[in-house]
Image 1 (tube, rainbow, N blue to C red):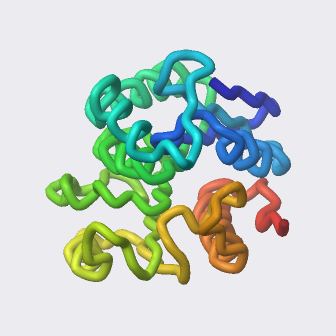
Image 2: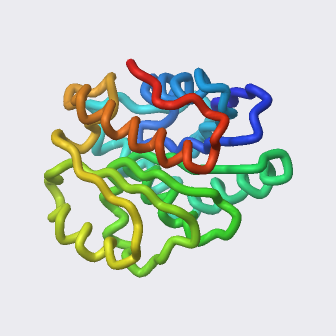
Length: 207
């Protein structure tokens, strides 16, 4: 688990991809902490376990066999329950499976908002209607499903959705599919989303 305490009244819960708490998650948490936000990246795996990007299939099977979406979302909700007395505002930011986990948590009352980066498995939980402000990012194309069909369904729920050039993983500077321009645009959108609820933050951060 990553925990960065800046004595802020706002907490960001970061939820990792199938790869675990890797360099991308550490980097992203540091980016958020530069603006004096408190950050937690809870580890859904055993301490120290992470996967290389070349182990995508192995990582996905491990997540599905040993964690799963329901258990993971309950773990994030437990973090929220443990932390809510300490903070005025709590947001979730999730990546890939982490975005789907954030989506599952969005029904829980008390969150100030969720942000999901390329949560492809959200398509399995389209029946959910978030109880908090929700911001979703998708690449223009996904290999496993039609992005715009999913967006068309989700937009009926009056949530904010944006698409960006690039592939699944476009915001990860450690990934071979990193798209710096799209990543910065998405980060700025996320910054503005959080900033609406946290007037004291100093977004946007430039890389």
